[in-house]
Length: 223
Image (cartoon, rainbow, N blue to C red; front, side, top):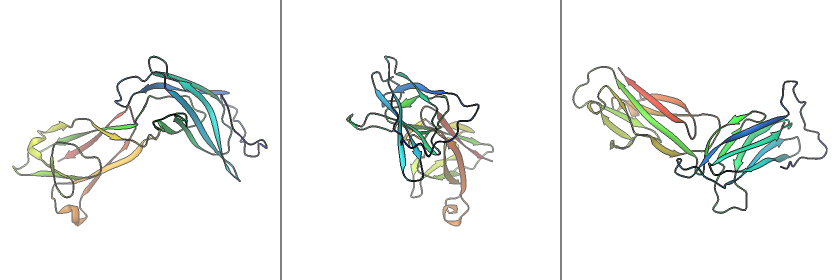
């Protein structure tokens, strides 16, 4: 385990009284399918320390996943004045290039989190139709992550409300992820009148979406 820091130590911060001497990041790594544990994968854990004159990169440690895909890395208290968090990557010399597998992990925090060779975002939709709708009524949706299996229109998709049957859950969508540790705000627009896409009356629904392995649910309630 190595650490790359400037020798002058100008940008260190005082260690809080309640801080630990060591912190651990652990979890299980899965292959690109998100199902199969990945054994024998080399991982590097790096963090950036931001000083007045330059940005310092600290190698906090490394690990190799075991036969079950599990990994664990323990590092010393990180004393830079500011940080963009910790990233889990593969060694630079490895090909093909993958990663980061997880980034912006909070420093000086014990973390248990699974990762994937190709970071993913799992998302499903839940529709709740509370009242009877007329034949021909449809739900119109637009956004970058929409459920599959419905009619495509210029703005996105159209879903006949009769197909939702009161309460309906979509299949889980698997999308690429930026691999950020903290949840990221995502949303879609919907309306029961297609013309509302252009009249500023469409409704925005948002969730705090988490990366792999969490399955995020975005619920749309139609009165």
